[in-house]
Length: 220
Ligand SMILES: NC(=O)c1ccc[n+]([C@@H]2O[C@H](COP(=O)([O-])OP(=O)(O)OC[C@H]3O[C@@H](n4cnc5c(N)ncnc54)[C@H](OP(=O)(O)O)[C@@H]3O)[C@@H](O)[C@H]2O)c1
Image (tube, rainbow, N blue to C red; front, side, top):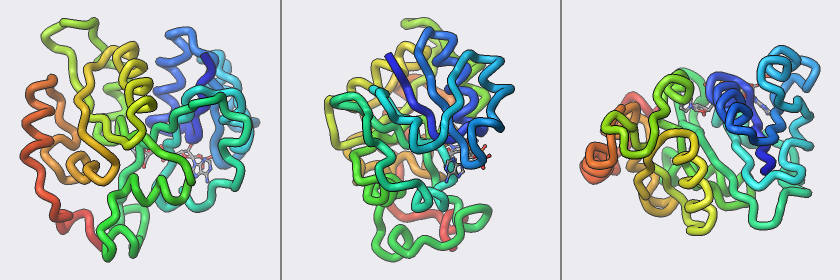
């Protein structure tokens, strides 16, 4: 199975490492071009590509770039993706430190992933957004291991969500269904589940305990 990864930083780089280790055919892109990804390609066997080529033939496309850069992604981003492809969105809105003010999120109350989905023009599955990048390498555990972490996963396309949950299971994590994309405020920055290292019960409880009010630290 082919997986395209757009963004080769902390999260994109480590997903490239793990998914190639599992035997997936990974294409990876960043903003500066494939010639800047030769070290990652040599390390992992992934294929460095231009952004517009990352989704070609892919059954899963991971978009893992700073939120403020989502509108810069080119039209036709998903042209040539496999039938029924799923898009994983790992993004978070950090208005103070990185992204600046995004009015649709702050004033209209759109979830971060609803905003991203609107820009991408394709349903997204929100996953990994509250996962420390290093944990992708360090924390995978076999099924039924008592230490196995669970990750919340939200999205409207049920088939795509199942596809993504199965992949995360293969990566060594349990998942908890966190609802649709308009429910995904429950896993945004500042919520109890964000950065939580816990199993299914702890993640389920944390999602239930979230407040819809955006914390001051994550408003501009
Ligand atoms: N770091 C974490 O532990 C963590 C955890 C969970 C979620 N997240 C979220 O996941 C997203 C990515 O985080 P990160 O820490 O991996 O970011 P990062 O280390 O800053 O890497 C960002 C990557 O995105 C690429 N990029 C930026 N603009 C692009 C564009 N227009 N087209 C193609 N590629 C572009 C960059 O390429 P260049 O280097 O070539 O510019 C870089 O490879 C963010 O929304 C972040 O909040 C991060």
